[in-house]
Image 1 (cartoon, each protein chain N blue to C red):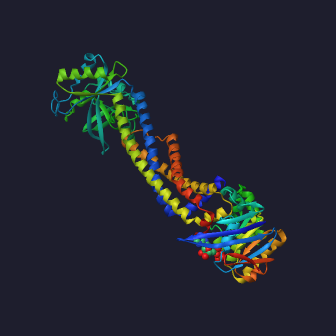
Image 2 (image 1 turned 45 degrees about the vertical axis):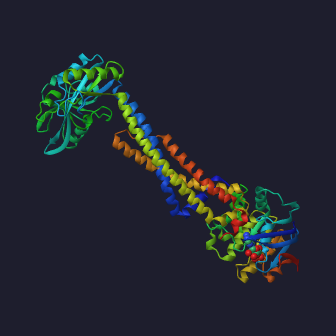
Image 3 (image 1 turned 180 degrees about the vertical axis):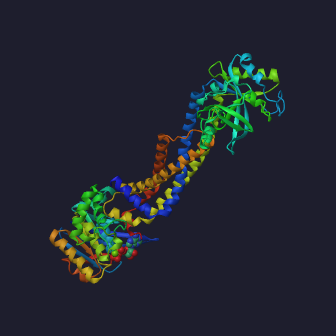
Length: 222
Length: 397
Ligand SMILES: Nc1ncnc2c1ncn2[C@@H]1O[C@H](COP(=O)(O)OP(=O)(O)O)[C@@H](O)[C@H]1O
Ligand SMILES: [Mg+2]
């Protein structure tokens, strides 16, 4: 599914070049549920942004579904994000002006799906994450756990082949975290969606079939 | 993204920043208002001049005594033209066919103890044909009326008398300037402006011989003349000027229909220039305001841009979203400006006596210009938004 080979990423801080990813090798299989753990600031998000085509590596090769990501145009990258990838962020990243339902339908907006169909699909997705009753609410009227469920519904709405979740439970309490983890596990198990889950909580990582650890800009298998 | 949703989205977001949006709108409102007023005034003047020709004909001119002291002229305080001299003009000047001299009176009209200020005109029988005065009732003043105390009521004054509860007007007596006049006719309403004295509507008309003998000794300062040709004032002007210089050592000015139109066009150019200047400055100010609103909006919504990009929005989707927002903003300004412009035209028409009218074309132009301002000044901010990289946008607070 995903193949990262010797991925490097460095940032220029003032005049100093700081290398965050120092040659990451990682392979993710179709249908897998993978946890990436590591201390805060070690570059997990940087890695995920590269995997999700939000950012580009400084060097290295990235194969997405067997296809090299190099030299893809902005339109092509947008298209891959739209159809193949579902993002779940720590801060939920819902649009506060829109209702839960319209937030969920957002990926379909950029496929030109008419509003009626989007809402139908949005309702299905909200039902799937147990938020069917709250479709009318705006993010500000929902709890953190509920917002994250809506965000997961949004990630699912475009029927992606992979979900990239960057510390999805980082802003939630333990009980809610467990519910969200259950949701990911069931999506992976019942629908065969590939899930890459980033977390700094080893407890959550244990619930994934496989986990890798990021140390000093490199990925090590645990 | 579908356009109608983009429009709805942008209304939401603009409503979210009401104050800022409103400030930007002021410039657009004034700008579009001026543009609309400018175009409308141009068209009104064009209509006015057409109406001018249709109403009175192109062969009418106005002869006025030049009261400014000149080389050949007498100084101020002249006795004016004599009725006999004016009557000789058609015979002496081949270019002039008929004349209609008149004098202005100013007094009060009294009825049942109620008084209104009322202007009057001393007129000849030919006055009616010269100024195309329609009669609602009775007859017009005739040259055979001589020194009789007869009068014709103007439309507005007749209305006033009726409002006072007057019965049949023709045949009744009215008190004007301390003298009783018998009403012989009531004039219908006429369009004012052009050469027509406004007293035709607003005052009363009495025989000119009588008027000239009234105690305040009014004088003939002007008369209207119909020319034999179709409106070539050059020859008529020469002949009339020569006639008055020879008989009276008096300087006169002759104004033809085309002079009147030219004067109106000068007036229009002044309005157009003024409105054009105000309009373009206001549009630039408004445009910069729109640009500012949009730049702030883009920087405030970087995260939203990032989210949309993460969900698959292409650069052009983002660009369109912000462009639609700025067009919607200035479009709202355009609609308000439309109202302002129509109001301004109404005011101008009141001042000049022109007939109020706003064409579809000027409305279309205002709407078009406002959309253009939105696109022009919204392009740069929208482009800024579209150029943000997804990760930079997403990472901003
Ligand atoms: N745009 C950037 N410019 C400079 N430094 C950055 C940038 N993005 C991330 N970093 C740095 O890279 C490091 C890794 O960040 P991140 O991937 O967010 O870590 P994690 O998600 O593991 O907590 C941090 O030290 C952060 O300061
Ligand atoms: Mg992180």
